[in-house]
Image 1 (tube, one colour):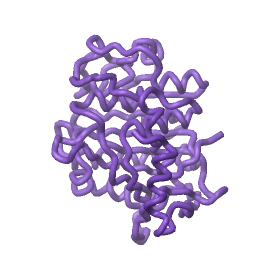
Image 2 (cartoon, one colour; image 1 turned 120 degrees about the horizontal axis):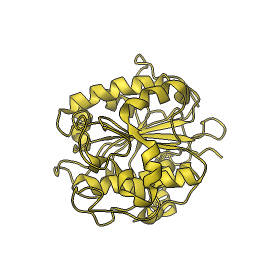
Image 3 (tube, rainbow, N blue to C red; image 1 turned 30 degrees about the horizontal axis):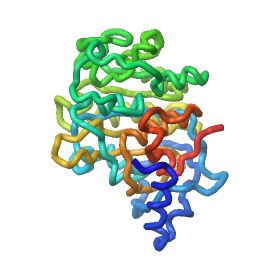
Image 4 (tube, one colour; image 1 turned 135 degrees about the vertical axis):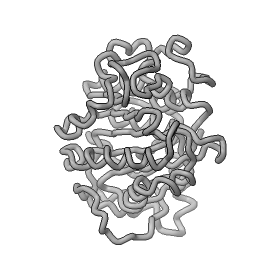
Length: 314
């Protein structure tokens, strides 16, 4: 895996002829997207907002869709891809493995931990820190919102189409007490968004219909539209300090694990990042937001935040 500096240098070297590595288009807008905005051609470059214009990021909310490729999501999720075109998205972001679990663990822990199945926490107890424990140890907040989960930090499948393999916090045994407090059913997300109490690190796990595992991508897109409307109407988004990431855990074995990753941030405008990124890049960004070093293999991955030129709050 290329280091952060090497990856940035390589991308910029390839783009200097376009004049794209040193200028940005961020304007610090802190308002909800307007559907009537005229389309603008996307800018293919690492995004570097002008100093003093773009708000810094202190909170990240991650949504995970299931088992679809970049092309499938782009074609069948019109709302989600409209966000991608308005704000930013990647063209070379790959999941790391099959099946699902290893990818969720990579986002939360900076490694797949060699997991090649979807067995539960009893089969894969993981020791050491996660991005959630990093946030809490820094005095920040972390919450997983798992739709359909029958109770906090549920270690078994159940409830309304809840599966534990999509809930990585449950696998980190040293953080089980915190999981019992802050890994909560998804119906708590609306109140947090409305009141401006979204966490510094937030992971949103739809149930297996609304994440498009068992239902159509159109169903997932509609669910995201409804949910995102509430988040984008809330104080955290209006503050300018919330970044939202929508990604897929993996593809359906059809596209070399190439997935669509959309980054919604007030300082991004029509940005397309072509640099190679993975779930380790997302993990690195989550650690950086809470001012902690990226975990395990994520320490050697290019940061998603760096790729989009997102600045972390002091």
